[in-house]
Amino acid sequence: MWTSELFGFTLFQLFYYFMLYSFLGWAMESAFVSITTKEWVNRGFINGPLCPIYGTGALLILVLLSPVQENLLLLFCGGFLVATVVEYAIAVLLEKLFHASWWDYSKKKFNIKGRVCLERSVEWGLLTVFVMRLIQPTVADFVAKIPLVLGECVGTALMIYLFADAGVTVQQILHLNEKLAHLSEAREELRAKLESTKLYTARQELAEYFENHPTAEFLREWKARMDETFGDIEQMQLEERLRGEYIFNEIRERLEYKARALEQDTMVQRRLMKAFPGLRSKRFDKELQEMRAQMEARKRKRKQQPANKKSRLK
Image 1 (cartoon, rainbow, N blue to C red):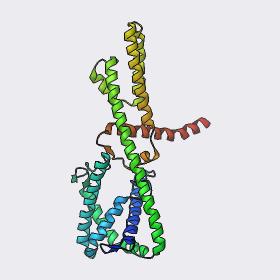
Image 2: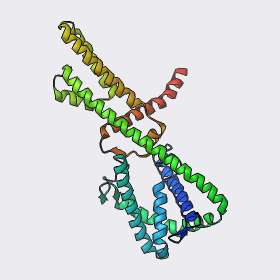
Image 3: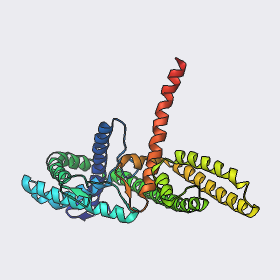
């Protein structure tokens, strides 16, 4: 299988080109973002040190543009076009599969639906020239020196790892979407219950307070109003008092579920949130951004703890 040819390359070459360029793309992206943010950021879509979008783009460029690699203008234009099409297609695919946009160029000039933009496409064109003229000869020599038997064994292991890693990542994204859906449902149920208790005098007051305040603050304010209202419940008839207590218990359960759900996230979900700050959910973006805010708050709290310990020691 590995020695079969496709588009003028063996499958052995295509696979290792894909892996090497996925790794180089991951290294470049992670280094740039880490330097920019002054903290380590794993920019891969999957957990391992790979960015498959770079490997995919590199293979298409090798297959389509090798015949014109001596012409710098054609090489630039070809890279500009191929990489732009790949980036746009993958953006659409990720949106369809996960109902989310993973990057957003809408604030850039000459963008198409925020998925691609002129600035990034020019960078792709320049990168294509750099890779084809300077990087690819070295990569090709390296792959040519890999012993076939060893390369087949390592390649099989890498392929298994790649599919397993991708499977874990996809499963975690689907789990995140499911949690966001539950949070959205709990939000709407809570809204309806709160309106029925008359803790808030008007629907608009509830909507504004619920949407614009952090969960912890909302919980404190709700408990204060609940305690105040419970004082009046003693004056109610038994049936009305029991109904009120039942509703309050339901509200408490939904608030506690919401607070727990926002605090429970996996390492993969935290990494994806950090790696893709432009991540936006098409269906549940309000819940996603609230979850991101909770993660940032916990992160700031962890950073403050060592400083507080040092100050107490002094």
